[in-house]
Amino acid sequence: MKGGGTRDEVMTVMRASTVAALLFAVIALGACADGSTSRVFVGPWTPAPDIATRAQLTCATGGTAALSTDTLQPQPDGVHIKVTNELDEPVSVAGFDADPGTTNFVFTGGPGTMELMCWPFSEHSSGEEPDRLSLEVVDPLGLHVDGELPCEIESHTISEYFEAPVDEGPPPLDVARRVIEGLLPDDVLRVGGYPEQEGGSVIVVRDGEIVATYGIKRFEGEPWNVISGSACEGSGLPFEGVSMG
Image 1 (tube, rainbow, N blue to C red):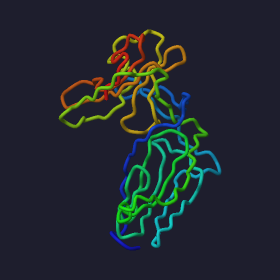
Image 2: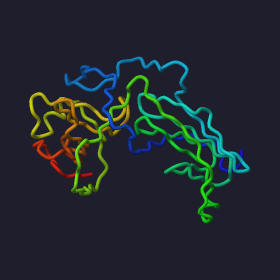
Image 3: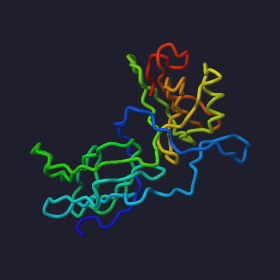
Image 4: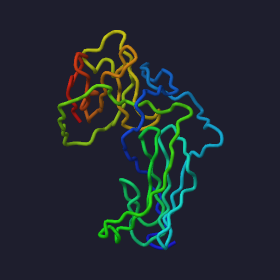
């Protein structure tokens, strides 16, 4: 293998979900040590048979690209793709880059079609992308919960914080219920994304539809706080009609 040898690191990559419907994950409310409840995957995880749980993209010398499978199912923390870059320079894969060697990526987007490629940095100036390879991500176990709001959000604001959170969340759902103002007694809270992904959002389901989604984090010496989110007009929830994130 040319280049920088073998490098094995895990990177989490966010991408937009291509699914419009809400997929309810296989979850349960389990007791934590402090007596709170949290979203827990009912395990041990057993993948669906005959569907790969990790795809390997090989960027070979000579400019060729190959995928180990054309269909992939997620693991409890997301979609796993291993990129083996045999070139002596980084390549663009599809919205992210891979250095020479081996890198493991974990995507937290939902089911849909991913288009991957091996585009060496030295060829970017040509503006001509190589052919893309299609990878179909399926979710036979319903692990992914799509937190996309069905309503239109017209106002978007960026929030900034100047220190890294000590916990990216999500918090236990009973804690989230205390933190989010304006919830109705029958509102259901779920964690968006995959059961074991870090930093998943908390979504509010009302009468079977998602009406709000929140990022709840905890900073040093502080309690859990809503630091980002959006809510549909008329919901009476924080960030109603706006997107803060």
